Image (cartoon, rainbow, N blue to C red; front, side, top):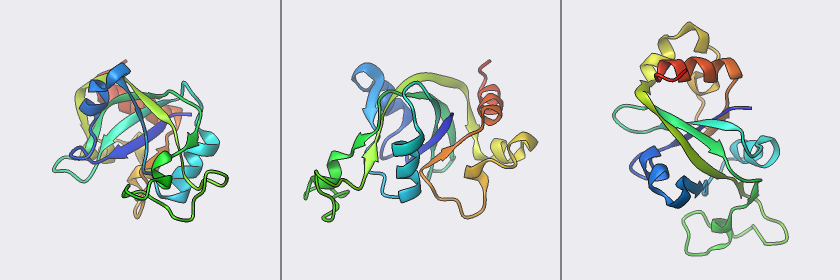
Length: 154
């Protein structure tokens, strides 16, 4: 199943992912139960995803990533110095999970939110639904295909 991952580019951008050793990064800090459930229960290594820049002057999708690990407990929940610390989480009973992601390819053309909204084949895309604020959402294979084409990929 394909996925859409959102991140604020001033916090962590697609270029940051590409610059990481091995072009790989743990996707830490998710503190929404539905997004956590997607990672914990539904993601598989090898699944493709799209990297969406949010909360910025021009929101949109910069490129393709891949799920690179099985889900595992997010260590930031146990760190009292982390902004993502959860005092109710324990090693025996973790509350928050994550996956590692890897950079796959940049889009030749940045896919803006306006481009997404204007495409009739994306009308049901979860990220575009009113009130959706999830940082991770599933995509249909057809949505992935449409967005890759909008971004200049085959």
